[in-house]
Image (tube, rainbow, N blue to C red; front, side):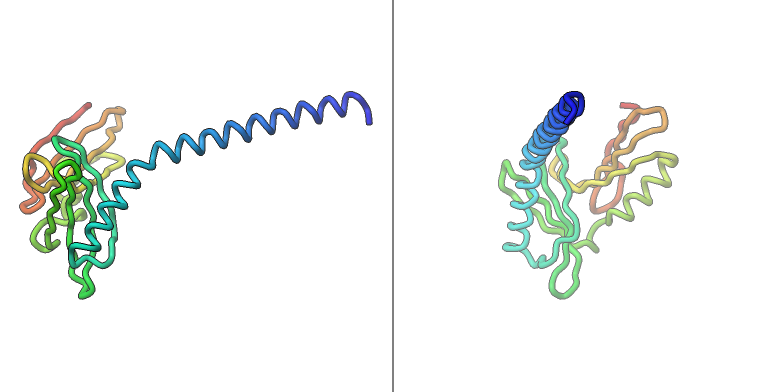
Length: 164
């Protein structure tokens, strides 16, 4: 084999090896960066399945305002919808029937009618000032962010922060 071909193959091998090592390092970083959040969601799911009538979990939420809270939406064997909120620091948990409050879809509809024209909406269920709340965060066209907090039970707007 030509010495230039050997040298080219050697350089190609080194480049591929370096790229593979970088890729593996990024995978490890991503895994360890997301592990605490997935562990908390798993813990909340286990508590809800063990201590409540919820048998199927449909969605997980996380909110950190004045208190860190992990929440989920789920259904019982009979098809009844529930929301479960767990406060890991105080180890308190709250179970709400879905028909006793506003759903994520209802809150997004309320938000869109009051604050139209926002992109990248994200809705989270959690705990704020001793009550269950929905938080809608959004990304504006000018690059800024904002959020609105809504009372879970009534759908009343509690706080509004824009252009953050």
